[in-house]
Structure formats: structure tokens, C-alpha cells
Image (tube, rainbow, N blue to C red; front, side, top):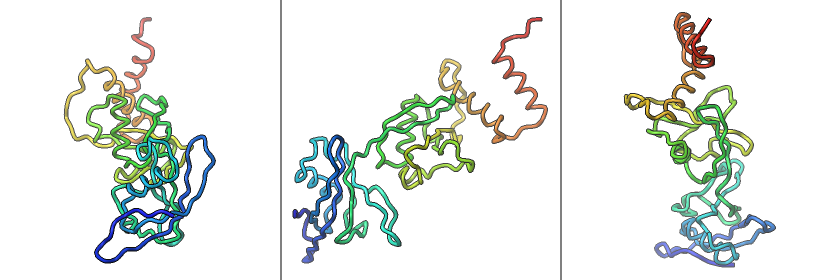
Length: 234
């Protein structure tokens, strides 16, 4: 049994927690460790690394996860700058110390699927910025993430994690432009961005997301034929 934390005023409250430890290449174990209620989750993670012989990567590669507590709190990743008190974690609670990086599949704007390694503890906004950077997308704040194939076309809440948005392991993410903050003209010398915008515009028209008149649809179909088959030469 170990203690970590500080004295808050004259009150010193120790919590006994069931810590489930998951490390790659090793059998999962559960230990009962004692922490002060005022300890930050970063202090808790460091103590687990120190006392349970976890690799030196420590909190850089691992995070703390709280399973669902029925009628009390949903399952969630715990932010390291918060304290056990902030999350109302009580003695006897279970927390999981496990790798926070995972591979996710993302359908990008040209309809291909790419795989990225993301940090599950980060917000959807941060993950969107990361993916946009990998795709060399300008103005990432105009883009958002959705779960691919879901009929409701609902955007994920950018302020919370993928897990809190209901994303599960086998699903595929989709990055799309959702807002238009900037009126910058598309530079024809930037073929990657030009192609991404073209692909999303075509998809929105074909799927009915972007309504258009019959005459406009015919004109756009003609342009698409020219793109696919080239100039007509009888």
C-alpha cells in the first residue's frame, strides 16, 4: 500500500483504489494502492509507474481510465491535471492504467482510408488538428470528425474525447469540412487542397447534402463526365 499526495488544510483523506494495470506484452494485473484524495492524476500515474515497474515511457504513453460506475459516472479518460476529488473518486473505486495511443482508421476527403495513431485522452478538436496537419489541410478549425457510415451525419463534439462521443474500436472516422470561416481563394498551385475540396463538393451533391436545382445538377454532371472521360472527340 502506497501513499501519494499532499495535506489539504488539516484534513488528510486516503483512498484505497483498485488499480488495473495493462501493459503491452505482459499479463494484466490489479493492485490495491492508496492515494490522497488531493493527489492529481499525474501524481497518481507517476506513482503507479514507480511502484509497479512500468516502462520508463510512463505518463507519455499511458493514461488513466475510469470504468463506468452505474448511476454515478460514465466510463471516461481522466485528465492528469485534475485531482481524484475533482472526479469524486472514492475509496474502493477502480481505475485502469493503460496505453493511451491507438490506431484509428480515417476516411479522408478523397474517400480513401488512412490509419493514424492518436492519443485517446485528447479532445476530438485536438485529434482533428492532428489529422489535418498530417493531410496538410489549411484552416483545420473549419473541419470536424464524424463516424463513417452513420446515417445521422452527426458531428462529434469537439470538446470531449472520442470515447465520450460513443466511438468504439472497430468504427471508422471521417474528416470533413463543416464550417467556412475564410474566403481565401483556392490556389491552383495547391493541388492537394483543390482535390480535397472538389471531392467533398462532389460527394455533397451526389448524396443530397448540398441541394441544387435540376439545371445545376445537369451542368455539374456534364463537368464530371469531362473530368472522368476527357473532351468529347467524335
